[in-house]
Length: 115
Length: 112
Image 1 (tube, rainbow over the protein chains, first blue to last red):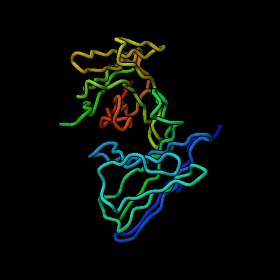
Image 2: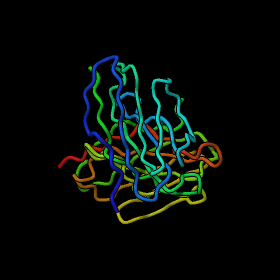
Image 3: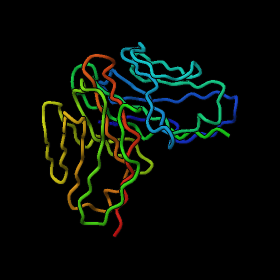
Image 4: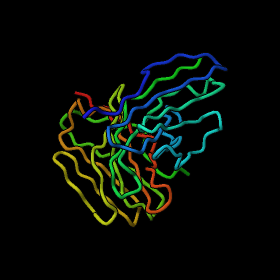
């Protein structure tokens, strides 16, 4: 079974641009969560999608958005990039975290650098 | 304060035991997890414990839970250089969003 795939692995953008990151979950998993990881703030939850609907949202500005497609693949978009958006963005998939203890499987992440 | 707290660094000698500690604030936490992140990789679930358990052992890993003090620890016996990584503690609460809340991670450095 293929794991969680995130593309691209590395990205360099300039301030003010926008970026789209992609996540393909494990086959059969319907929940996809996104996290931002920085040295200063640790792992912060962005949002979770389940069956094409945003089910949970973290405390990030509206510049951060996402969506999920009918095949459960998910994208996140950051508009008007700021230097502070430089981070490792991690995606996790699970069958359904709402039904007790279901393991979240993480991708390798996309390293975004804003210059 | 933060919901899940961990010390940032731990350095041990190869062959010794490592103990990574974590405290959490929500008494309704149902599952508590330990994840490992190696350089350049995502997080990998190492082990978890349900809140009605005190201890769980899995080969070199021992998880201890003190629910009264809201304290969780991960003990790695016979620590090897390959154990060098960042270890994240996470809690999942009953009700609510059921999305795990992560600590900032503890960097474990194993030196020969």
